[in-house]
Image (tube, rainbow, N blue to C red; front, top):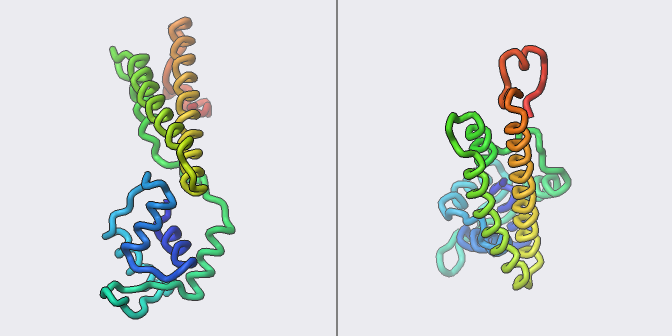
Amino acid sequence: MSVKHALLALLEQEPMYGYQLRAAFEERTAELWPLNVGQVYTTLSRLERDGLVESGDANEDGQQIYQLTDAGRDEVTAWFGSAVARTQPPREELAIKIALAVTAPGLDVGAVIQRQRSATMTALQGYTKAKRAATDLAYGLVLDSLIFTAEAEIRWLDHCEAQLRRLRQAPDVPHRDTPRRREEGQVRR
């Protein structure tokens, strides 16, 4: 997630000080991705250094108000006008965990998958309950994303279990990439 672009997008709506930006961000993301106020002010300093925001006069309570510059507006426009790049996928802890689990001798991979499925189902139920109560569009869309991600994770866990069952039915099939398969140019999946 780009804190930089999120803050610029919020400042495009109106000038704000750091705590206001933090509160506005958390409000729009259903407080699911809390921001450290120190991160907000560090990012504001960089944005000011880069000419994307400028600090104006302090308000009556002494808080420094930040506003977008023309370059900042151009940056927000470019950000909203571009797709989120998928060239460098995020490091997904669950995928790494399962990949390592299937190669760990003596580990009950099925139990690892079941524990994760249970945790994901619990999270999915919480997101669904929150979605039913949601009245704000931004909050609802964030919850939709979390619901879809949890549903996809459950489907992937089902796929992992199916692959394990297939492997158990054909024990002579290698379950991990061997040096020979890599040399033959086969891609690991």
